[in-house]
Length: 383
Image (cartoon, rainbow, N blue to C red; front, side, top):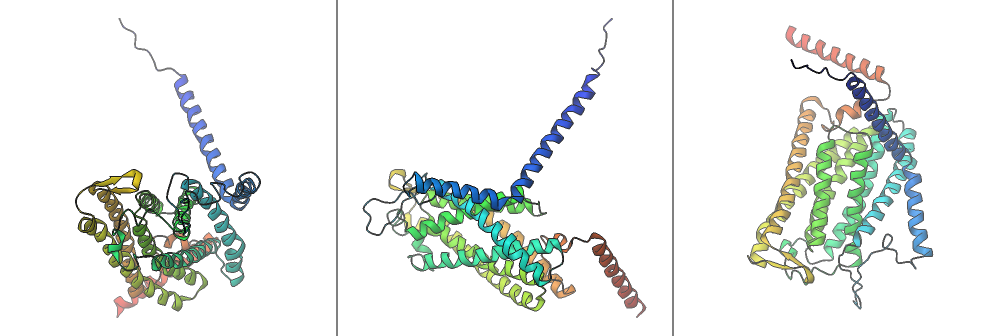
């Protein structure tokens, strides 16, 4: 007769111990993230002080973290190539943007919003976030347009590929700085998403940031930087008006916000759909017309053209366009609200923005608005 063994009694206690250990790990992780968020200015300033102190004292003013690398020897124009050491400069600017963002948000924009009379703690934070983005997008878009204007690909997509790779391997100091600093910004944006409060559009934004970083890294590695410059300009221009519109709403400038929103819609459709389509068309079709069907893969000479590499690059552009179409659907939803309800709320974060620091007051306001709507419906039925 075989005996059936009973489950060990200690399994219950083992499960409880495992759960407690997981809870402790989660608590430690949460505390670490909270410390990182609450002390952004301190630790980022400390890291930058160490980097530049080392650069000044030991590296002779040529530290990989603090300066552009891969300068072309004996180049009369002082141009640069791309290389592995560019990662250090990108990391430096990711840290620098942490300091710049936190300083502008917490030391300038949040005090301004409170002084101006914004009551909700959450809206003060949102104003500071969108204000920082508005400042950044204005500066980055102006720089990007300046770089494009002084290069052959200004309003000419065929120049993305003409004389490739010889005319594309060498980057001016301005072009390379602009490109690597932009990459540093988007790396820092991924950091912000991971450590700060999660929003309901976290997944979409995370995918967007990852695709953007991959596009920029790929275009830098393959010497498709002219395409990357054009894509960044298309993205940044409409974002100026999106973030600006939100800032105006938080400050109570409703009419100005509506005007800015209209400009945002026009710029969005023109840059993120029309011009973006022209760029994607150039990547997939004009390459074949200009560079031909044959592979020009020669890593030593900076040529990475093949139909496979172009196909992968096009795929990333298409993924980004799918996200843009998704967001435009939300924009159309906002337009519908304006027409039917006179409500200019961002569909991605309207519930978050409307939640103030006084929960009871917000619930009461919500209840009163619902009661008013019920009265209006009953009146319409009586009529």
